[in-house]
Each structure stands twice: as structure tokens, then as C-alpha cells.
Length: 637
Image 1: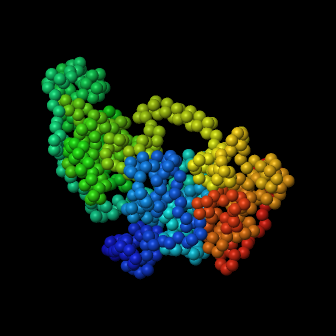
Image 2: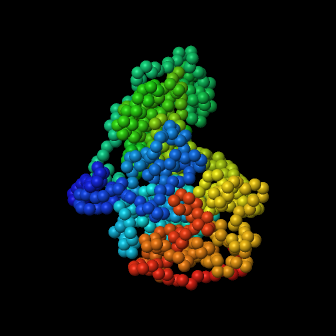
Image 3: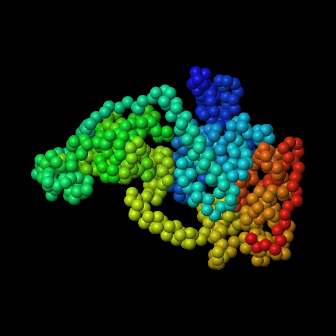
């Protein structure tokens, strides 16, 4: 055990730059080349090969925050892209890098990533350690900074690097059914395998972190416990005169005067009764803030979200849990504290808005409520009550909470300085980021939940009926300014440049997928991967059934085509399963085919043999195997 701890603490350093990692697979960045026990070459020294398509940098066509397209600010080190408005920053001049890249975050072994390969869609894969991959994959040419990934669904391998991958997140596991609609069986299988593997790895990581924390006997970060809010600076409390405090109509003889189930007008309006004003007197049950009638809670270490708060007994719906207590500051002091935190790399904030001029900061001083974590599907909520004329923030149960359950509330837009922090709540409706509205937030009561499901189902069916066009160009796979085919039932869209059109077509325009490539007559058979199509006279020998997934494809995509890729870009394939592994260069898990070279879209006449896929043997010169292709006759698929 001591040797293991020493190995965790020992640092190994890059020989070319100041980067250093702990000498273990958990900390070492994928793509690092180990030179000795205390030295290595980090992925920052990756040099792309000119003309090699899998070394070209690619960015996503949607914003990482809102998932919408449009004018995006793209990171020059990874595929991340954002709207300027979503980041709330000024347009930078020159090169721009996202926060993760600026912080030096890199992919690690056993990470689940989305990987871009050639013309295919983003595909889920796991970063494999070089010592765990097949020998033929390890012998393939690769540079420092490249790491092998194992594709889910197809069991292919590929050497790639940071500019063509981005992390798989918790929210992706909840959206696998949505992303798997209308796709082939291999991709749907990949989504299922990726979600299952991600949850398993996440549980292992959380357990490992919990064991490490318990071994080190870590305690919560220090803070000063206070019972009531403390004023800082020029901020003042508001105190009302007894004549200004509202009087309810409850009576001392009532069964539960001013209780949760009573008709107390003050409770309904979120006013706390005053014992000298309320008719119920000392029997009033609407004085939880003043008497500090909190639920019994305990601080504990969560698996993935640091420290949290859980209840020690059952809490009923609507019960008062705790008051959010801290230092009451103004906006100027709030900005100063946020700047100080950013300058000192402090990432935890405990600020919550009280009103337009005051903010509660429970960071340096507070009570147990400061440990409550965020959730997109919380069991508590914040309520602003008026107590003796001043505003106080309380936490109330949204549902019945059994003992031992973690208490959470939705930070919403009331929580300041959270930026675009990744949400780790794991709720089914998780939005992915703090401060972003949850997806289809379910109501607390069953009746509301059933009604919501019905409304969602109606909206969903309506969306499926009205969505008539695809979102990406059928030729290159990118979004942007596109033209759509006017033929009834055809959802395909294209860039004008992809079709070599100098201007947008007018009138009833039909895409080239419906005309024969050779004679221009009505097409009868179509390639499912690009706009190539042929009539009944010319389709013989032009279309094949792909041996990769059974799709109908032309020679541009046929794996048994006559022109193999150059050395280093060969897809190795053995029909026998067993322990055989396959490698992919440009033919990864398949979807609708698109071709690009150097950012320029290739027309059918421009596509070179290097975009075609060939099978090869493990060693020696390239030669073809399985050269007999299946021909499709008399079909109109």
C-alpha cells in the first residue's frame, strides 16, 4: 500500500515543457510517450501529418451550452464551439481556446469520448491504453499525442488525437434513446454500449475517489458556523413596525394554528407570523425562521459532487428544512469576491441572491445549508419569506424525503458566479450545465406528471410530423446555408457549393439523388451514403451491398473497391471473429456518407481513390482480399 501511495505522489515530467503528471494511468494524459520512470513526452508536442485527413482539426456545428447552431466561436485546440452570447464574452481577436484547453485538460485512458472519423457521424468510443490493444493496431504508424480509441458497436480501433474528440457526458446517457431514433442498428448498439460502459466507469471512479478521501480522512473545507445572517459593509437589515406586520385569521383553539395544512393567510403569502401579532400567540406554527425549527441533517461525502447534505429523519412535503444563512453583501462586494476567487483558482461559490441589492454569501460563514448540492430534479426548493419585515431565504421539501436521502435544490438563475459549470446531478432531465434550464422538468405531483407526459407526447408527435427536412448537407455532413429538395417526400438538403451551383436554385428544384449520374434520367437505385444514383440501365455493376453494415453503396464507399488507401490508412478485416481486432482509418462505424478534404467539399468527379475503403492484410504490401462484391438487381431501395 505504501508503494502504491508513493507511485501516486511521484511526478514524471515532460522533457520539452513544464507539464508534469503523477506517474499512473489515472493522471497521465492519453497520447503521452513514456521515456523513463521520471520523464515523458506530453501530447502538447503533437505535429499533424500534412495531407492526412484524420489529423485535420474539426469543430462541432452546435453550441456546447445551448445545443443550437449559428455563428459559433470555435476552440482551436479541440472540437468545442460556443455562441458568444452563451459565454457572455467579447469577441476575441486572433486565436481562441476554451476554458478546458486553457486549463490543460486532456483525454485520459478509459475516458468515453465522441470521435469524428472522416465523413461519418460523431461516434462513441473508449480511450484504450496502448498495452491493451491488439498487436497489429499497436504497429500502425502514430505520433506523440495520438491515442487509440475502441469504437462501441463496431469494435473498430483508430489512432486519433485531441482535436477530433470531445468528452461523453452524463446527459448523453439519458439521451441515447433520442439519438438512436432513425439510425442503423450498429449505431444504436454503440449508444447502448457507450451508456452502459460510461455508468460503470463513473461508478468505479467515484468509488476510487471515495476510498481515497476516506483513506486521507478529509474533512469539509473550513468555514465559520453562524445561526443568523451577518451584515457586511453598507448593507442593512429591514425591520418592520408591529403595526405593519400582517395579522392572520387563525385562532389559538384551532387544531394546528398557522400550520402547513391550515388556511393561514400569512403562510399562503409566505409571511411569517409574529408572536405579538398572531391571534394564536405562542401556539402559532408559522414561526419556523424565528425559532430556527430546522430538520435534522448531516454533512457527508458524496461520490462525485464533493460534500453534500442529507436528512437524518423523514421529511414530509412542504416542511421547512433549513434557512440559507451567510454574510449579506452588496453587488460591489460580490463582484470583488468573485474576482478574488477567480484570481486564486477558487471554483466553489455559495452566493445566492436575496433581493436586487443584497446577496447572501455562505462561503466564509454559514450553516449546514451551504452544503446542499444542485439537482435538475431536486427534492427541495428555495422560498423567499418575509420575517419581521425583512426577506429571508428558506429551503422547503418539494416531496416526501425519506431518511438518509441527499437534500438538493435547483440553483436556477439565483446562484451567481457558477458560469458554465458541468452539472453532475445525474437526473433524467439533467441540462448538462449549471444555470441552464432542465429538460422537461417533471412536476412534483403525480397528476401533474401524467398531464405533462401527455402534453410532451402530443408535442413530440407534432414535431415528427412537421419536421420534413434534414439538418445537415447530404454531401458533406455540415450545417449552414442549405438548399432543400422540393420533391415530395425527399428530406435531403445540400450546400450550393457541394453541387457546384453558383447561386441558389429557384422554383421546383429536385436534388441530383433523383437523376441517374450517367444519363440524367429518373433514378431507380440509390447509394445510401452519397448523392450517387443510377437508372435501371446503368445500375448494374455500379451499386453494391456493403459488407460492413449491409447498406446499398456505390464504389466510392464499397469496402471491396478496386483502389485501396495508402499505407497507414488501411482497414484491416478478418471475417473470423474470435480474438481478431479491426482497425479503421476512414471507414469507422457507418452512417450516411459524406466526404471532405482540407475543408473543401468534394464533388463526385473530384473524389480520389484515397477516400475509398479497402481491406488489407496485417503486414507487408497492400493487397485485396474478399474481392467478390455482391450485386443488387431489380431493387429500388
